Amino acid sequence: MSDQKKTATLTVNGQSHELPVLTPTTGPEVVDIRKLYAQAGVFTYDPGFTSTASCDSTITYIDGEEGVLLHRGYPIDQLAGKSHYLEVCYLLLYGELPTAADLEKFENTITHHTMLHEQMQYFFRGFRRDAHPMAIMVGVVGAMSAFYHDSTDINDPRQREIASHRLIAKMPTIAAWAYKYHTGQPFIYPRNDLDYASNFLRMCFAVPVEDYEVNPILSRAMDRIFTLHADHEQNASTSTVRLASSSGANPFACIAAGIACLWGPAHGGANQACLEMLREIGTPDRIPEYIARAKDKDDPFRLMGFGHRVYKNFDPRAKVMKQSADEVLELLGIENNPTLQVAKELEKAALEDPYFTDKKLFPNVDFYSGIILEAMGFPTSMFTPIFALSRTVGWISQWKEQFSDPQHKIGRPRQLYLGETERDYIDIESR
Ligand code: ACO
Image (cartoon, rainbow, N blue to C red; front, side):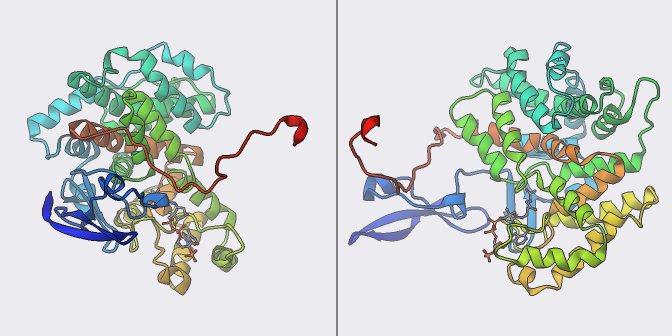
């Protein structure tokens, strides 16, 4: 990975320091500043980590300028078109595409871990009925550490493996049960004869008095949503998982931390926020008003589903998602859906507006995923839980990779302190 011969020179207070430059397999070179403080007594300043690599990784590569996303070297459009979610999970976790026998074994393992400890039901029942499913997920996933003690020893590779399988397998059950609890319907247990996506759809939409026939086109679209969200290198929630794990926390606690981070509207919560925005706009004639608000510096409003920290081009996932949205809406006969009309017109208007094109603000994956999920019958509150269940494999793969790095340390950023210097305490009667 590294080419120790290359260096960068940094001059601080008249003194020059040679810093190694590391060469990745692809992408920009990386200046190694690990010894900078020891050598020069200075920190670097990079709020939001816009120019900082926090780790090395072999899992996912993004070229934001070109709109490229590769998992273990394979382009996302090929994976979304030719593969399926559990195969992509295997690829992310183990580094290579599985043989037919490996895949069968992996699918069998995941399928046989989908049930939740029966007592976890009572944990769900402790929440208020109007709890957001993400609130339930943060709590229930964190609580897994209290139910699955036999896979919390992070120093035991076998326990780490079982925790990975449990998380991938149980997350759809947890998300579906959060939904069922929220709607006041009985929990539906997983079924081993169904594939991962069909099982999830059935656990969400079947009721004891009437089973749910899974439509293969909807199940394929669901699987594709899972695949498109599976991993995205060092995004906010993944970095949160890595940071939580760096202290030696157990995997269930780390994934709960990732879910909490994903919840925010600037990250995983954007698909919910995007659909709510499209509904609020309501009709295409109101689009100019919203575009004007998004451009107004004094208005905090942003066009949800637009822009990305890394992509300064079309999000490659958005292209596949758009195609999937067309297929699903055609199947369900709702091509004239008003939200979709607003989405299409808004996309067109933004792409013709220099404010958005100059700033390279293009639709991201969340722009179309909400439309598909709504058409399938999911309420907006379920959009982010579905993202969380899809991303679990990415979090787990990055967590697993962290253990393979012999140099891994507790994550502990520095700061630029701008507060008061030392001063004496003033007694309360003198203030
Ligand atoms: N609408 C209007 N203007 C925007 C938008 C937007 N959606 N996104 C960015 N801008 C503008 C900013 O105002 C800023 O303008 P300025 O340079 O004149 O000050 C410029 O574009 C750069 O914006 P930053 O916030 O600095 O970009 P950053 O990379 O930090 O933010 C983010 C990326 C958070 C995704 C942002 O684009 C955003 O808030 N988008 C809407 C929320 C969204 O869709 N999030 C989903 C992300 S994808 C995911 O998590 C799967």
